Length: 156
Image (tube, rainbow, N blue to C red; front, side):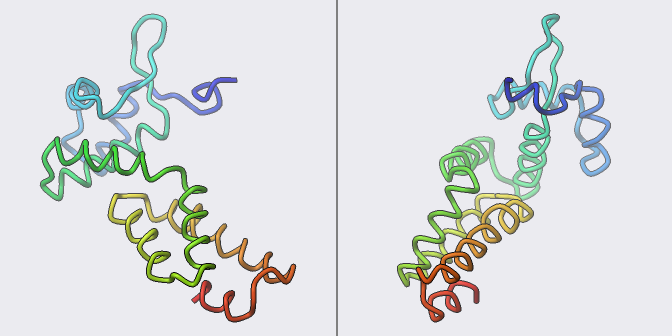
């Protein structure tokens, strides 16, 4: 099953209606502009109508937040690419965990701060990066793979 079949796809009108609650300036034309600029790539029906997945709405919200910070389109493109290069939350969690367990707490903190500064939503940062990493530390402690001191350093 393709990714887009596993999630609900919304037509542009519903996306505009949903986003306008928080961002009154969102319109059909502003979404088409983001598409022309390569910042959002919606799915298409056989008839050519745009369909947006939840990750598209998340991306648009992030773009709107960056626009509110007065970032240029070039800066937004750069941040979007950097966020994409940051990797999936699981990869970020792995980097955090590796640094923390190596005793490099500054690097571990930098991993989290970089993700936050690039705009990883806090829900994803806490729920999909920190929580799984801390859970993994607890599991490793229970198996005797990390010391109490390591577990305490990482969890604080």
